[in-house]
Length: 256
Ligand code: F6R
Image 1 (tube, rainbow, N blue to C red):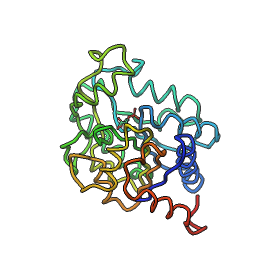
Image 2: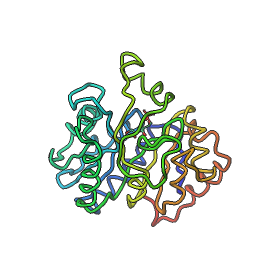
Image 3: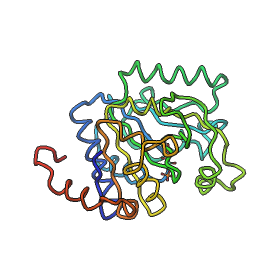
């Protein structure tokens, strides 16, 4: 894992945006895995500002709430169109987001996996992290080999996400999420986390044992992971000074 600690979420998001911009320059038909929530907002703003060419890019989102139609203001369809897709030149048929209204959810999940495979797999997956260590909506105790499927949110995640809804009662209990096995097949992973409330989950994921109790810890087994943090999210890392040292002394050819 490469741990990149920056003074602010803005600085960390700019580095993440440069990594994606570089990929799109090198592979204009790249397949991106995307996340929603507060964390990637600055990243998406920066990507929009960069005016990249998205005409050949394909995207797959991590997750969607079950029961929310695409035009629901809290659906992840709505989120992605508002915060990214309507500002870039990606053709709509190259955008994939799980269908929270699917009548046959297992069949839909299988179809989503097939679509990812047919696109050639995900080149780079953007991830946030839950305060309980979830990635996608793979909550603690999720199988580390899981595929796209329905999951039940924990009480903590429903409460964390209630800020986007009018009340806690409106937060759905179920989601469709890419599995941990699905995420681990991406060729490159970019995990972002900002704020003190993410510090414990990040310390466990990066420096703790690999355990389904912190699903993000499985990323220790992935060969190409970059973790972009602000100081607050990095504040419980025991080896933070070492990660800064490594980043400051990267060989010139490895710099983005
Ligand atoms: C969202 C997702 C989740 C979020 C996580 C953090 O698509 O997959 O894992 O990344 O819940 O959410 P925020 O960024 O709102 O703190």
